[in-house]
Length: 140
Image (cartoon, rainbow, N blue to C red):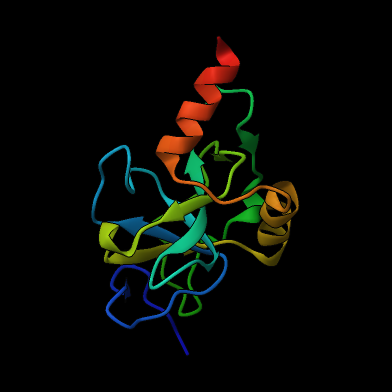
């Protein structure tokens, strides 16, 4: 089945796949401001994901490689999300269904998904607010 990354909405009973790169409609910092890599189901429509960023301000952020991110959908159309000095925050974040619907804007390659899962495998899922609060305690 071919995927059109620009129009596939997630939520309202449309499933995402592990490794999909998603954009949420709620772009507040505490919600879905950044693009999200879908990793696993969490609870009642919520899911766990990794947060993508281009920021190198935090040493915890992990650099990705161009070969970690697909440039084209199966039908040959360009993915909206393209590699551009892409990193991800070393964490597993709970993403609430209410921050959607989510739009699929890209996808990791198998190598990219394996890389992200390896780097985050022993991390417990948490909300962004809890992550920031915890990190601020370590900085003091």
